[in-house]
Every structure is written in structure tokens, then in C-alpha cells.
Image (cartoon, rainbow, N blue to C red; front, side):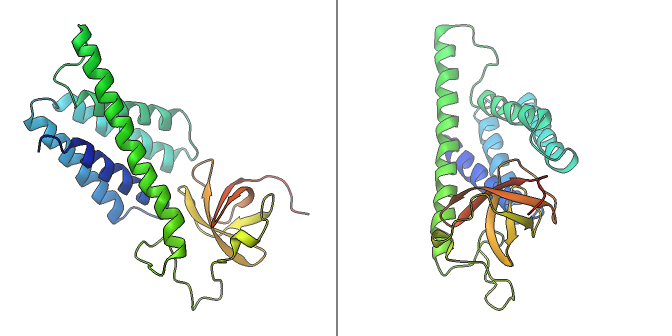
Length: 223
């Protein structure tokens, strides 16, 4: 399994993005967990990862879950969880904890660069899907693409011709951070820039990026 670490990270982060984009805890979260587990198992057999790294990673997941489900938003617990996850993954890529020589410092920097590149690759693939899938006929990713063709509230597919910046709407689904927002009786795919948003909350469009709206909660009364 040597050399497959970056691939497992890319797969794990990609499925983690999908899990956060779709409502509930489902198959994407499980696939992400399997990929992360495969990464740690591989590093364990290479003599790098141990119980400490796995424990730190699990603690990171707990902190992030608390931020999402217990303390909505993105605050101390979420930031601490992301930092701890990054540290645990870097430590799992080397057979020492604290660098004590120039060689070990270079190894740490190399591992950090490799991890950042893997995360960027996963992010790039995910962003590409957000732009490609809405224009395709495939509906294999529930929550990302909807086939509400027989529903009374279809997704508006002509968002490029509309100007929705500054528009008020209602969260038609829970945002974690992706979901659907209702504006003037139409449903639109959107992402929350502030993290979790409760269904039924009043929101405002901050920015429109093609087929995707970026929203945030709004306490401003609609005129």
C-alpha cells in the first residue's frame, strides 16, 4: 500500500465534501471513513502511524461533529477539529513526532505539502462536479443534483440569466452547508457561507456563481 496515501486522502476528502453537501449522514460519510481508515492502516503497516495518530484523528472528527450538530456555525470546535485532523494526518506520514534534525524538518514540510496538494486535488474535483453535473443529465448524487421534474417546485436551471444577488429567501432544506433555497416560489441550489442553517430560516443571497448561490442567514425583514 506504499505510495497510495495521497490517493486515499483525495478519495476521503472528496467523499467528505459530498457528505457535507448532502443532507443527513449517509453513504458518502461511510466511504470517507473507509478511505481514511485505509490510509491509517496503510501507514500503520509502513511503521509510521500508531495509536496516537488515530486517536488524534478520531478526536478531530468528534470536534467537527460537535461543531456541526451541537454548536451550529463554524467556531472554535470546528477550527480546532480541522487543525487536529491536519496534524494527525501529517504525523501518520512519518515515523517521528517532533523533528530533531534538518532532514526531519524537511520530511515534515514535504508531508505537509503532499497533504495540502491532496486536499487541493479533492477540492478541485468537487468544485468541477458542482459546475459539470448541474449541466448534465445524470442524477446519481442526491442532494447535489435533483431530478424534480415532476415536482411542483422545480430547480430553476436559468440562473445565469437572473440576478439574485441581495435577494431574500427561505431555506427549503437544512444546509450543512449545501441545500436548496426558495426565492419567489422557485427552488435554487445553494451553499451556506456560514455553515449550518436550519430549515425554514430566512436567508439572503450574498453572491451568485453560475448555477450556485452563496447564502447566509439574514435578520433583515423582507420588504
